Image (tube, rainbow, N blue to C red; front, side, top):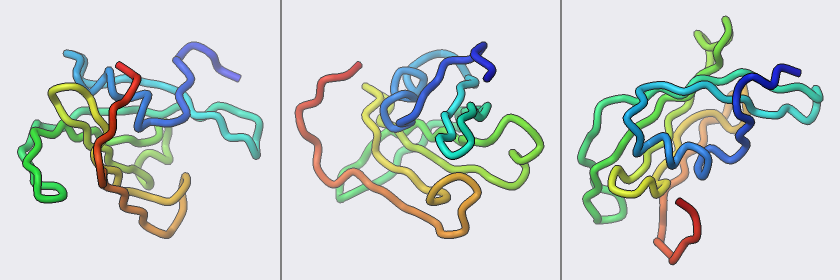
Length: 116
């Protein structure tokens, strides 16, 4: 296993700090339990955009997630975070790595939360 990059599993939580940071890209690893291995992954920020979600307007930081190696040309997903505090708002992409069924998740209600 390569342990040079941080290991993150739930990107909805793990990328929140990155969404608010000055960094444009970051590398991290996702653990594949079926292979007992870590998969190198890239997260790249796209331009900030104001979007409406559940009748509320948000300034969103979209992050494109892809695989770091050759398979990055064939698989990616998007996560959106509220720019002001990194709250996870939206996910759109594959249902699991290299899956065929698309998955869309949206924030339905904001609760008090305990994370950065």
